[in-house]
Length: 110
Image 1 (cartoon, rainbow, N blue to C red):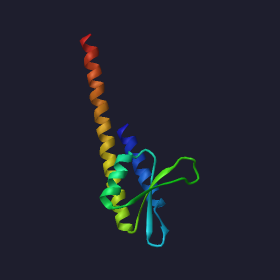
Image 2 (cartoon, rainbow, N blue to C red; image 1 turned 60 degrees about the vertical axis):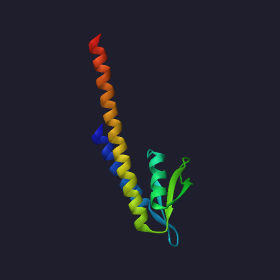
Image 3 (tube, one colour; image 1 turned 135 degrees about the vertical axis):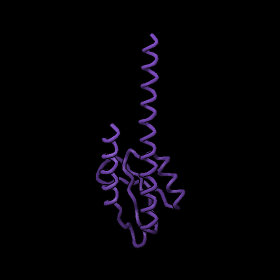
């Protein structure tokens, strides 16, 4: 499961990097894929001084969009978001492992 989620994350990173386009002259945007925790996105927006918006493209599902006036800041925010997301996923896997162990211990006691 861990390797599969890392591969999925890498594919999403590549796709998102390709979606980064100038909105208007001097304004850049980063479309955040579904599945990224909104808390991480808001933290990045605050840390890098980006605007948060919502966008509906071809799908009916809105996506979060971060906008800023510098490609470099958008890139730093993207890296920050994916690093935090990676840490979050890894901690989830650790929590699942610990929960399985607790359940197994309870079953062994019976």
